[in-house]
Image 1 (tube, helix red, strand yellow):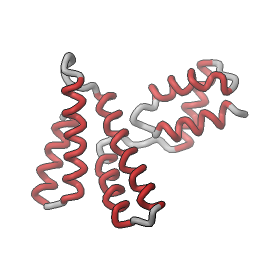
Image 2: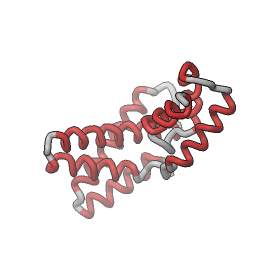
Image 3: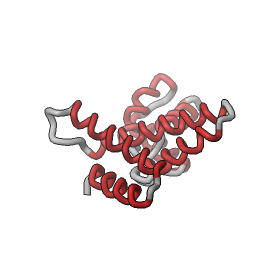
Length: 150
């Protein structure tokens, strides 16, 4: 079952349950997928990696908005954003723990022979490809920086 089919099935369930926050999150996912499909009209649909990137982007947007609302003491606006982020995250594969990310980064550093911060781009490129959808880019970046600055 494709991501679009899963989203549609969840939308129907949310409509029947009258869950407006979940429905709003699912509609934003559907909208982003349709928009990406129209942008890449030459190809046949989106690849799984492209779908994961869309979902990660949506989750990141929701979490950043929630953080801004929390800074401004607007919990009434932050909570719906956090709930929508959780709904969208449910479509992502299980995220790796920090220890698992660190071990992958160590493997990548060994493969590339990276020795310092000048090799950050090389390591980040490989890490982003290998860990796509399984880890947040910010977390990967932080771990890579700490490993290469030693």
